[in-house]
Image (cartoon, rainbow, N blue to C red; front, side, top):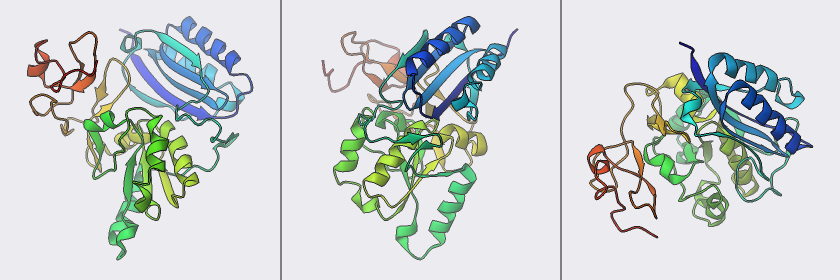
Length: 300
């Protein structure tokens, strides 16, 4: 039986003709039987695709022939084309929808003015140095660059989780002043694969955060390095049919059922067809349409 895999990568590089890249990527994926989501903009590419292993390898070889994509940092995980409902390849104004395309500057080296990249091992070194310091302001702050609901099932220990429903909410959060006390602290931003932090860290630096880092390769790369023996707790939310993944059998369950507060890492849509709110439910509450409902009443 053929092996199947999912790959995740992004690359910030100027693309003079995003539409031609979109057409090329769609034709390539269709010819190889791959499914997934690919976003192209004037600033680069962001892709998550799955399929037969040989087809995925061929896809990567051809994609890397593009002059701007030769140094792709590719992350691999278990899965297949069946984890995606279809192939989606779109051109958008931003690779990550912060709602401020005019603020982002990208050159051949990537995002201009972003936070310093740290490997998982370097993050541990920074955390250790902060704890050893006599100055409490040197203690590292982890800043979650994902939507708040993603952090319900997994996050770094004691991380700051902004009140965000979408990526569009981040700039208003940063401009609100509620995180101004962090502007003189070492801040490590993190997200699933690293792309959101590439942009978020640049936005934070433009707003006066002095010492901003980003976890290189995101949570995925950290999980590969330390699994559940480091500073990460819980499961990783992913935007495909898998919904989540764990780095080891020792993964903690930190999520709580929205209805009965039982431990769970499983998201389900509300059974109200007019609502379909994605929320955490335990297996027992998810088993019945009557309990698979928003406890406080649906917003619609």
